[in-house]
Image 1 (cartoon, helix red, strand yellow):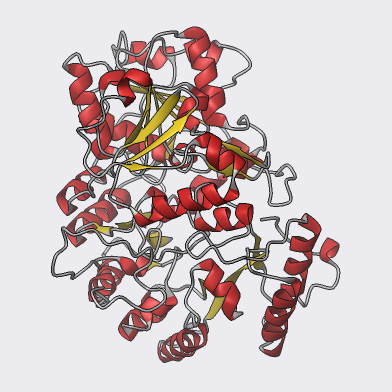
Image 2 (image 1 turned 90 degrees about the horizontal axis):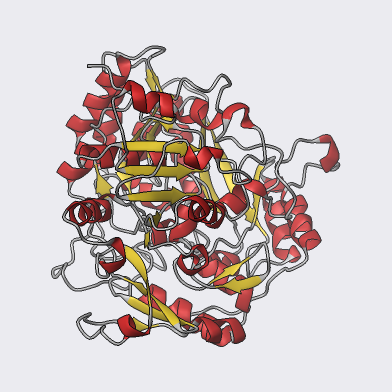
Length: 574
């Protein structure tokens, strides 16, 4: 049976014999029915849970037509900004409007509103007064408590309160949605579902008085305190990161938000079943123009979730979590076989990976895994003694996908953690010989020690040793291959002098790097807290911060030492 797209119009509802949908998902992206796109993944999962699901994609908030198209859902609206934070989609690190948006047809910029989650909720409320709204996705997840907002230079309260929604689902949403759907179908109101792991709910005074049944509840400094005091903001950040398995309560005026403990990671069987759902692996046929993000990842395979790297500037740990979830080899092979039967298959798997590809199959060997671990990184400042580092399972996946009869070439284009790979050199050999098409992107981020420390990176990223091994193994296979390093300019702790030192290092090696990102403080990350408070939230030591955008640009230009006239080169803004 050929999979059908989830409906996006009234005509499709009629064609499928649906009088009223159970759930309507609203997203700022185009609807691409591919598991790399969150709205499709959530939609297919809710469908598997027995619900009829429709999608409102790229709605115009200036009128109600788009929001009224599919009618009123029986259970709830699910709202996400899309695969990327809307403010990141709209503005560069220099706070200038971006010239494109790869998640919409034609890549045209400014198809989504600023703070899209809030804008979409406001539009829904104008037309559907009493229908529950659940927030999800990266924009909501990283704003679940009070947070510093780079674009307005203010501390904002939980997005749940600003959006006036009924619930926020943070992280990967499957377990939460399964419980929400079950309870909703049994007649329970979403506003009364106060204690589902992986969710955030808003509380009134009466609700706050009845929290004694939550064990180990951690009280965060109130929104008013963190807005008035940078020391309170640092304390909030410290408490949040040092209690990863706890529930949090944060007051804001007469209300409060309850952040329930994280949802349990998926079992491998559950993870496999999600990627076995009936995706079409295509954009909805309503779109006549190509969608750049789809063209880039349409032939990719997601094999892993989570990251235990703990980089301070990255929101992945606060969103997906540090527990690694890996699909079975059988599930991965089955997806390749399914995709190969589809129209347009050329035998190229563009990426076999996830957040950090070579974390596939790894985990923790702690003697008492039920006891919470408060390490933010399993690799920094040194590799944890309980971390599994045998990457043979990852190597086996690369071999298996590359040798699949439907595959001509398979590549790894997502993150590779170099210091981790050096603990199992055979992983480097397999990547070099089987999964690289000339260039492999890596992320040393910087070379100056105190900047790396502020980033939460090891003092030695392993770049030079990795590069030597990678080059040697590539030559054995008769290939000429190169590493493409990625750096960050303007991160807290980094001065122009540090950027010049990095540029000089690159010049000595005659490396003309082009992948230099200007630092953007992502809400709820440790680096964002450093940027706002000018302190390390764990030690309270002062941290230098470049607040002038021209200073950050100067750091970028120093790193790109070879580029004497930036206007003559196509240098992308971070």
